[in-house]
Length: 450
Ligand code: ADP
Image 1 (tube, rainbow, N blue to C red):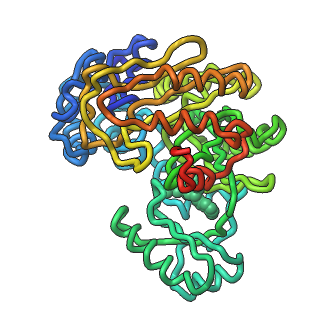
Image 2 (cartoon, rainbow, N blue to C red; image 1 turned 60 degrees about the vertical axis):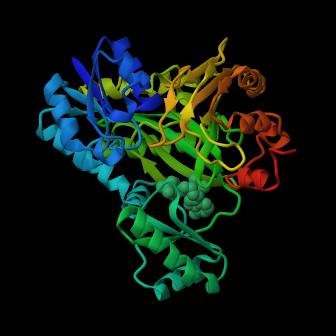
């Protein structure tokens, strides 16, 4: 087993990885920018190394600094968390070249799934259902128009290098297409340095349902059911739950097995998530994330499987210890991503937390690096923490979530807690009757002010 793991991340996920390491008896190295010297992940790690100034490109994305930190501390493996370098295939290769293990998928799989066009092509080859659309990147506006006419409007222009919902534009009619193409290309170029775009049928009211997988790189792979992440704002997930109110056990087993079989075929290593849109009883692949995801605790709560621990085990060469038949789903879990943002304008609200009281009690988990007196720096994303609640049934889970949200106190910065308090009282949310555009409509109709 690894002796010492360097955690190339910050915030709640750095803490999450650190906890798994401690439970495995593995030494931990935290890295931090100068802005994060007082961060909780630094305080709790066995050792810490400052890797640069506040800007992520000079610290958390600074590969030479991270390599030096490995060298200085003698770390034999790196866990990248999510974001930052977690889906950078070259980083994984460089670590290997320096004799350090990367806790994540094989570089070729990271690269394959990072190119959304290649990913879609591969998914299709592996028997995973995909959204109808162009065969690869669009060559010209004429090419786009032909495909759009063929699949029918509305269509969605998407960036091949996409991520975080950037470089995505809807065209309702042929007249809208040239502008949608030009804006998506410009956005993609600016965000990813690559203006390749492709076209997909735009699904009007789908749910976002994703399948969690785990593989050992030797051809063993299992699925751990789904997460419903349909409550989104600007294509960013806000609340996630499992099981999905829209799936039954046989639909789950069917799509789960399709995905697990695909992962066995490519000999996938580590945790991964295959994302789908789900409409009218059909699944449409959109992408695969080759990393641990923000919403992974939802799955952990209903399966009792520690995903980060499994990532570490299989990265060390161990075979998967869990069979598909050993995976049992019990109860219901919901996660709220609580951001330090104004709950109406969503403007980030960095600053000092003067009072902090997280909820507790049965079935309540808070994954957060926040503490009383902590100053949230303005340089990074605004995730303050995740509240994850488990209940025997969806109804019990929602009641528990409601009371946990009411207990949660964060003073000194604005947070999105009021949004969640409103959501758990909304009839559609209580009924599980929502799709990926529901939250935007709720916000536009002044849902919070009511
Ligand atoms: P990104 O990598 O930028 O996150 P995704 O392909 O994962 O892009 O899509 C992000 C979100 O955009 C999805 O969760 C969904 O809300 C929306 N979306 C993507 N593809 C489609 C589509 N074909 N029709 C409707 N909405 C879509």
